[in-house]
Length: 160
Image 1 (tube, rainbow, N blue to C red):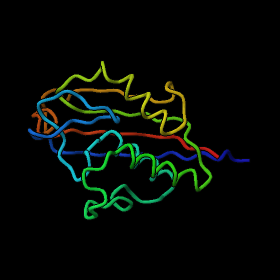
Image 2 (image 1 turned 135 degrees about the vertical axis):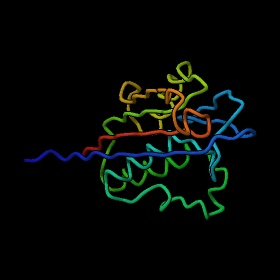
Image 3 (image 1 turned 90 degrees about the vertical axis):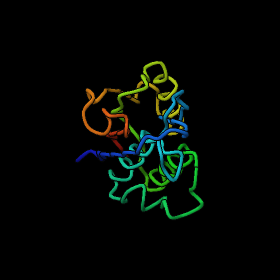
Image 4 (image 1 turned 45 degrees about the vertical axis):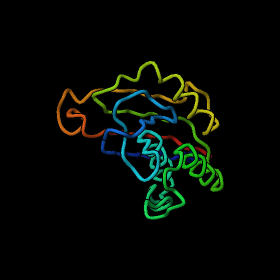
């Protein structure tokens, strides 16, 4: 019998601007610049939402939480991840693990990764060691390297 597993891929990007808070993985990161978006613009949580949704062919985060809907204006992205996870559970699936990559030139986030992993693991009802978060710079190339934007990629495994 074929095992019941699904894999999803998520990607998100936001512009960086002065005067906004920087939220990554549900954690506020001290920074002079932050991500611009309709919600709190947490690219890491948004990429995880897209990975979860993609694994079950349920569309993307924009289809479920439109940036045209004022109900989601400045919403905490942890709530979006909770709602996405509830949708996954309602379909009879559970999360096995998530593997994420953040692409940002600055600030350095290594000190915040343990708290991000704890936050994400709690929402997805998995162990902290089942959440992987890596960060890399863009070697000063492109919009991420020029401090104009931030990117996140995520892969998830779902199982029944």
